[in-house]
Amino acid sequence: MATQNDDDTAAADTPPKRNRRRDLYTLFLPAVLLTLAGFVLAYQFVQPAPPGRITIATGGPAGAYYGFGQQYRAFLAAEGVELEVRQTKGSVENLDLLDDPAAGVAAALVQGGTGDPSAHPGLRALASLYFEPLWVFVRAEGPFETLADLRDMRLAVGAVGSGTRVVADQLLAANGLAPPAVRLAEITGMAAVDALVAGKVDAAFFVASAKSEAVARLLTAPGISLLSFRRAGAYTRRHRFLSEVVLPEGVIDLAANLPPRDVTLLAPAATLVVRDDLHPALVNLLMQAAQAAHRDGGLFEAAGQFPSGRFLDFPIHDEARRFLKSGPPFLQRYLPFWAATLIERLLVMLLPLVTLLIPLVRAFPPFYRWRIRSRIYRWYGRLQAIDDAARRPDGPDRAETLAAIDRLEADVMRVTVPLSYADELYSLRRHIDFVRNQARKPVRYD
Image (cartoon, rainbow, N blue to C red; front, top):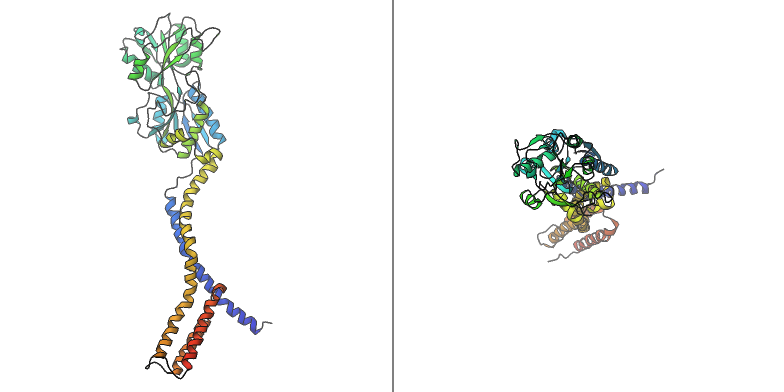
């Protein structure tokens, strides 16, 4: 059976609970709304999560581009991103695929000198990757030291749109060897090798790695010589996408001394090109893949020379420039790709929280004190008004004054405050008693 004391306790507990809830709403609701507004504002600047699947355009299955694309695919797969390697006819087609949003290609391997930035304003280079020498094999004994020596010959220069054809056309034109001064066969790869060995063409152009099957076969083929560009310096100054590289004597086969002498070659650089809207996190991931694949160098590249910000046809991507200068982002050095990108996005979202909560936390204690004390101090205004009225000669009589004090005291008795502020509430009640005692005296204050 509930006692009277239990009822009194329950009645006394109800107002404090209501007041505490009201304090929570008053204090925390504005802070929560302000923080949510900060989150909404910050969200406008948050990059969406990177896609889990992208496509890279490479080249034919026998080419170096396709092989490196497979290396990139394995690297990205280890980080939880699927890379589709799409076979193409070469650099020109790759650029066209990048330009077409419907093609779904986000990145491509492109031969230097094949892209015009003004014709592809939406593309950005990430880095040059390695040198791709131009090999010109001739079916005859030398000496062949200039392209001008190829006049009146049948030349295999690659299909229209291939990287080899783009370079061959430029260099032949510079030497005044446009048709009909030469006859062009639009074949490349092993088809061009077979045609050269069989005597169906007199010379064949290849832009390829020294490890390619076509180059390896022709270097050892009897009756086939490799043209050395004696005027390489002139070409590199007239065509900035070209570099002069040297194939040292014997580097292919020391026992057979292949090549039998140093051969000077011209080399564009293979470049990794992307759409400018590719997610920045994927740019960094592709840069890491390129670094893993190309940092050791090769016959024509020193270790650590590539990936590089040099030898680029297209403007370099801002994220790629930062990567080449400072390496991978801090979080991607130590965390899996998915975790690093998630934290990077959350940091942007947490910025308003930190920015807003620090001043809110600092302002909370004084605001809370003001809020609690305001329940006490506002009664002092009424108490002072009663006391001032009682002092005036024309003020209310003693009975009215005492009645007003009793009403004030009854209102104050319903005020609840936390225990840490109880002393101030009891101080108010003592002051009410003081004013009441003064009002009972027969002599008023002046």
